[in-house]
Structure formats: structure tokens, C-alpha cells
Image (cartoon, rainbow, N blue to C red; front, top):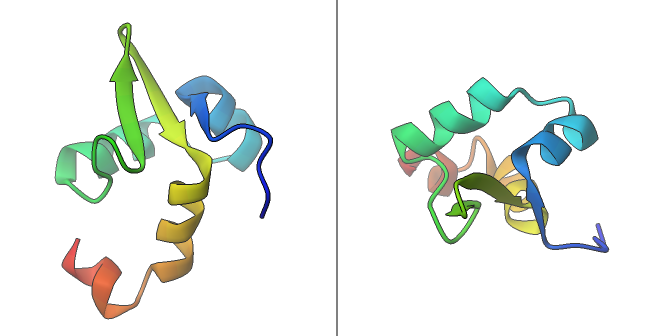
Length: 68
């Protein structure tokens, strides 16, 4: 998927994907999503990298994703 923006605030990510903010925060807390890769905090806001989040979804269930 080609994204016009790479990073979006969590609220926009939730709007775009239908995922929940709690699920994103949980993945980050559990280390499934890494700061600087799938997400990061900027000026107190949680941002999500759309391309990296999509890669994570596509890899879910593979050895790589299961190790995360």
C-alpha cells in the first residue's frame, strides 16, 4: 500500500484502520511494536508508522512476528 503520509497520530490511525487505541498501547507496552519502528512519542502524542504497522500485520503468525 502506498501511503501519502508515513507517520500519523494515534487518533488518525484508529480512524483509518478501525483498530483501538488500547490495542496499540498494549502492543507497545508488550514490545510487539517498537518505538522508532511502528510507533513513537512526539511532543506527548503517540504516532504510528502506517507502513511498518501494515508490515507487522502482514507478518503476524510468521516466526518473526511470534518472536516479537
